[in-house]
Amino acid sequence: MLQVLHLDGADRPVAVLVEGPALRLRRQGIADVFAPLPRLARVVVHGPRVQWRTEALMACLEGGVPVLFLGARGTLAGALVPVHPPAARADLAALLDAAASAPGFRRRLEDFCRAEERNAILALVRREGGGSCDIGADLRPAAVRRRCLEGCVAPAVAAALANLMSGLASAMVAEALARRGAGPQFLMRRTGGFGLAEALGRVLAWHLWPPVRSLAATAELDAAGVLMPPSRRAAIRAFETAELAPRRDRLLARLAAVLAESL
Image (cartoon, rainbow, N blue to C red; front, top):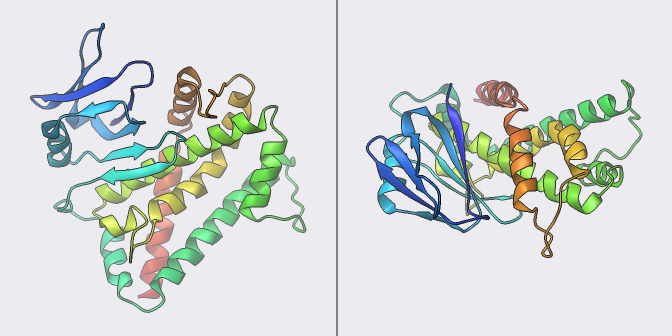
């Protein structure tokens, strides 16, 4: 099973080098750690204190390991993926390329993401309401998020945790899109592109409110409103044990089916 490598230099800077088929992680005062590239699904970089050697980045590209960068507040800031797609492209990549030239493509993607997010919100509301859902309630994402935050013991901490969870989910989707051969125009928001990774990451993040609520009781923020390193590490552990990968794969399969019907 492929592993996710999280790099966080908040406590002490980390230098990323390459040695043979592995990344070599070097921190002052502790022994070097080796992360074999063939065992990595993706690398997630938290914050600016992770120092990369160019050859280490090249090794990730050549090994087909996406590198995702999260900003200080946990949002997806960028993605490093190979220019050339994998030799065997998944159906989703071909469908995205074919549909991108069709009229109304962006609207279809927006409609799909909006519908999936609404379904995820409805599932959360039903789960939180003991199996019943007030359809008349305001189910817009911003309104539901506000109600979720108001129900937490520390709303500001919960907001920071929710932002991090959404960023981690977006990184997970970006990795899956890159491995399926989707072009960079679908990984990040840019002129003429569509931030599909972020949009689908927001869908998955609605399933993470139970751990957000639990973690908010003990997590701490620094003076700038950023999660303290121990709290961030606890959130990352909660995310990685939430087993979202099957849910992500089903979400991408539904997207492929919708695109196939529209062509």
